[in-house]
Length: 609
Image (cartoon, rainbow, N blue to C red; front, side, top):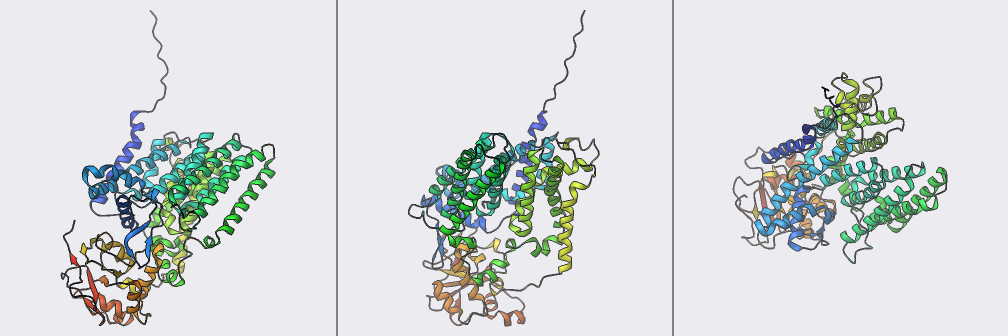
């Protein structure tokens, strides 16, 4: 009687491993939803308030090209610099639900669900990107990546409806498509790169990096490099053209708007795409040097053409800001500085978090060096990671993107440090170097360098502005104010953005650079150097002034002497040309009407919710 011989077991992914991405999404979603439920917004800012106002207006008006938002009169109209396509996910969900549950409830559902759905998409593509590195257990690496990215994932918290979460998703998609070979990936990456640029200007250098990688594939004679570059160029040019006509109002095609997707950016993308489509045909039989020269000439020609056609945009997206605003407003916005300006961030417990991210991001550079060009995934990741690190150091607002590139590098570094049995899940195609701490050293050294710089530089002297005196209250709990018809409120930009959520409010300033005229008037109104603040109200055509209230507070003679108007208003001591409106004694704001306005021209406070 013969005995059956057992067939060798075939390794297959266990159910738990397949379920890890879903479990990660569920856990992170629950954490973010809990933070939302207790009113803690890890990454939230006033952008969410303007976006909510913008999405509501898009649904109410139905006009995708009209970016002039109601309720904001400086008295010049205010136009949003965000294209309507970044509002589309929220508007689409609310549009479907509005007939069933009404507009307000539909918007609430959209603002809660869409960020979590974008998070699911991000984790899906992050898992695909991690799979390209040959780790023995990509699911484990995904868990590690999510853990060190958790703070950045606050961009996907319910209610966090700014466009940065969409940018993060597109950035991971572009990275994955740049890593994987094939013509379809090249074509899709052109579409994704154009979408990423249309969503916001911040990631322009990453788009340029993708251009460089695709061009080097062609110059170096990589298999399918010529065809892939052609497909990338055609999809880039085609998508850029389509997005231009989709986002630009008819009749405004020639208007250059330097801070958003408009004719300058579209022209640059289209010219780059067409260059990538044409040069491979011309250089089919040429060597690397002629190919490089042809691409360099096309690139230089495109840059010169854009500069000649749109010279005003060479000064950057903030070209329209006055010197006064650059000093008294833009330079004081926290995220507009560099890590060299943020001693409170570096010299704190956040330094450890920063060091882990830097170590993970720059460990990819060590892995790419060890691979010596034998592994495309590590080479591409290293380039993206270095650019992300430079971005984060020089411009604090980019810190949110750096953690996206830290996970694989951190797994590689752990594979070098941990004992072999513990590091089994982190073993990839590229073996770590013999010096176990080498992958961690660049990032840790950089973090210590930043710490040393701040310790040597010492504390920075903090100065106050009059407008900051006027907004020193907890604005998150601002009551719903009901304003009389025709009221126009002059307030600090941060108070102004809180008031536009009320349908009856019209404000003269909110903290966005496209409303720079209103911002400057608000700042100059509270600036003690302004001789005649009443004239500022006349310029803004304002009827009311709103400031934070200090009730029954101890006088501060030093501040009262430095900021007589701001301190007088928050303490209830207005100039003769303003009269205080009667509001409850516990109201967050003090509101003043022009003395020339009728006695009943004052707001009331309605019930919350």
